Amino acid sequence: MDKATSTEKIAAKDWAKEYSGVSVLITGAAGFIGSHLTEALADGGAIITTLDNFKAGYRRNLDDVRERITEREGDVRNPEFVQALLAEIAPQVIFHLAANASVPGSVQEPAYDYEANAAGTFVILEAARKVLGKNVAKIITTSSGAVYGEPTSFPIKEQDTLQPISPYGASKLCAEVSSRMFHRVYQSPVTIARLFNTYGPRMARFVVLDFLRKLKADPGRLEILGTGRQVRDFTYVADTVQGFLVLGMLGAEGEAYNVSSGTSCSVTELAHALIAARGLTGKTEISYTGSSWVGDAQRWEVDVQKIAGLGYVPRYELVEGLRQTAEWFDRTGGESDG
Image 1 (tube, rainbow, N blue to C red):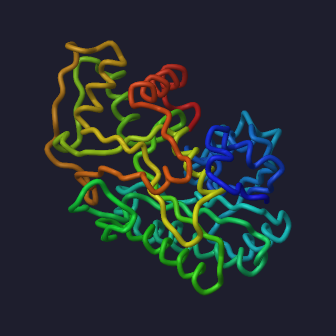
Image 2 (image 1 turned 180 degrees about the horizontal axis):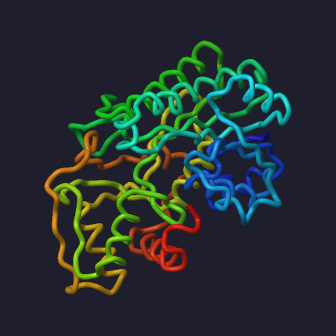
Image 3 (image 1 turned 30 degrees about the vertical axis):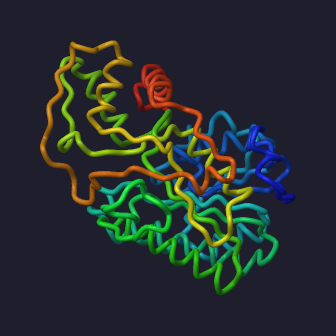
């Protein structure tokens, strides 16, 4: 793969086009974010192999690109399978998204969470080292803002203390530690993407979808889990995909990057924006449960200057992202795409 020599060379272009003719493996490709990344790369002309065990992903998420990709079903926790796959397809870039992506789910099943996120990442890195060696140009491992836990200073920067408060955050931190170790010891070309609160079409859970479902069931009342004062940087899925594409081209090896909108709001403000998008302003009463789930951080305000320095520019404001998500929900009921 011919890497761009400067940010200016591709800053104004469609990042996906930089992958034209590049052999790419996407793990977790049938999931919410993975399927959008797959579509973007397919549109850009990449040669794509997808891998998913379909525990959380949905085959129908890849319907629009099925004729332009090679699909494989398998589990990233299986070293023999992963090594055989890499030997067969010899990808130049690996986007590793396969994971458990639920904090509450990690609390209920911490062993599976660790296996999927920490052990699965180790298997990918070790297989790439053994099979591909210097022939792989970049491996992007997917982490999460959950590695920061409950930050004490804002906005959150990549060099801040990592102190997760959930099994999910801990498993992602383990994956990061392995990624850095493989870079230091074996010079593996690994870059870490720390994601924050992605939403959009095909999302299968999380607060935006929860609100849409509740408003459909009862437009006159919306119950918010917790106090509503939780602060997040909600990021539309197309911007998260842009972050992956940028890091696949220009991300520094051994480094972690926050991938987010860089714009924060409270959950209550999110609720009001979605109520407005539904035309329900003044018609919906908001209530609060007062407490949330174990491991739910109360405040995330994110610094994205590091990835912005590579040319990443979030394009979707919250109002537009919610509008597109609501349109998808109206078409599908939030179910048909997974």
